[in-house]
Length: 302
Image (cartoon, rainbow, N blue to C red; front, side, top):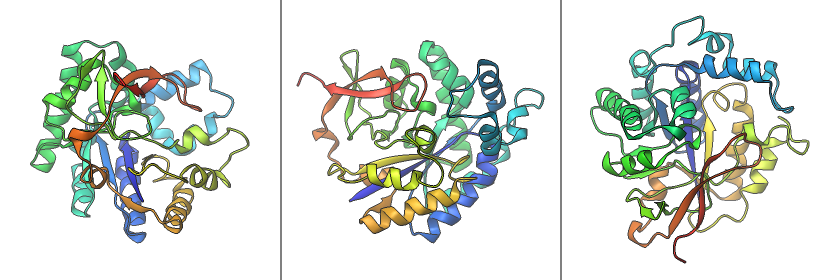
């Protein structure tokens, strides 16, 4: 059984502090993973500030947000300028690849993408994705082969660009198994390896789940995977920060269950892309997460 670890790196702090911590933790447990980087300016503070203004869901508190992201992240992009992650943290990004991990693209500007892509047109979407691709190539000396959208937020232009920009596969969706995405009856020649398990921030606060028992809850949900295994998405800001001990318990638990902990590419390498089922992609909801995400729906023309 395989379980792919997909690491979303959203912020400057998550890149500078969380990524090295996760590299050490993953190497300790001989686990593979795919790091997906935000490569442009960090404007996370703007998003957090809007959450403060609108009010949080009951399970989330201002204290917990500051604990995970930090005061500087809250100020970044508001009172402080947004740090250019790819420019200022290129050494950290290269270190992840040099340590043996797969690397790919999360986005250019995390906040712009999450807030803007749903209603964006072709030109806006292409600009954001091409900026990320150009920065990635400048840092690593080669084109990115894997894409994982910030917040599982996509539009039809972005799906088309995963194909046109040469990504071998992507993980932009939530779902149950690898598939060829179909958007408005249009197949996209870039297979999706969707996130199959809930994230820590979605689980904490639901049904009495807290920091002490969340690892056990995730492990329970990992039982009886499909033959293609699982994809778990973690965040450098959470599992690479205050929740590192929780993540380590999950790594130990998955190993005890018999999972091989691998990169997305290792799962993709065992797939026959031509034989993958075609599934429609819709905007849907997942438990514990506000708003909608790109969601694997029914099989196309089944």
